Image 1 (cartoon, rainbow, N blue to C red):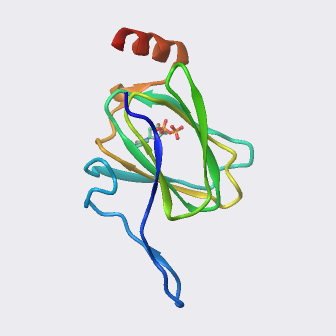
Image 2: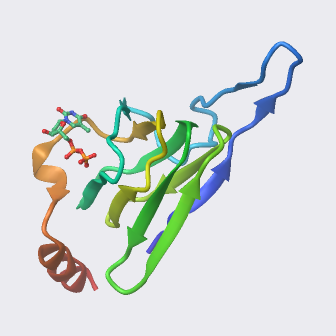
Amino acid sequence: MEKARIIEIPRIVDERGNLSVVEEDGLVPFKIKRSYWIYDVPGGEHRGGHAYKENCEFIIALSGSFDIVIDDGKERNVFSLNRSYYGLYVPHGLWREMENFSTNSLALILSSTDYDVNDYIRDYNEYLAYKKNEE
Ligand code: TYD
């Protein structure tokens, strides 16, 4: 099973301000089909709390910081994102939650599939059963 991992995004450092770019050149391990962003998150809120059967993600903290909790049914890992030149690759089939959003944080999520409500597993026990079935 593939694991979630942090990927460094190239930086073009410039006195006028830095620039980072993500394109379909192999840095992100899937073809980007969709992008969305999460912003104006009230203090203490969390997002996510689900798994995707097919969809893979690449999550970037474009501004501010937040934590992403990744759970494969056996092990939980927390990845903190706080720089716009690091992204977290989340392969499909992992439970993920997002929490500890700082004020004015902005999360960009690049996704491998179109939005599909049927691709979500939103119940943790259902997720555990799904994982068990896959083994
Ligand atoms: P959801 O993925 O559940 O957000 P989170 O996991 O961060 O809590 O999406 C929240 C709502 O937004 C849900 O009603 C579906 C809608 N939505 C779309 O219409 N298209 C999309 O691409 C996404 C990601 C969500």
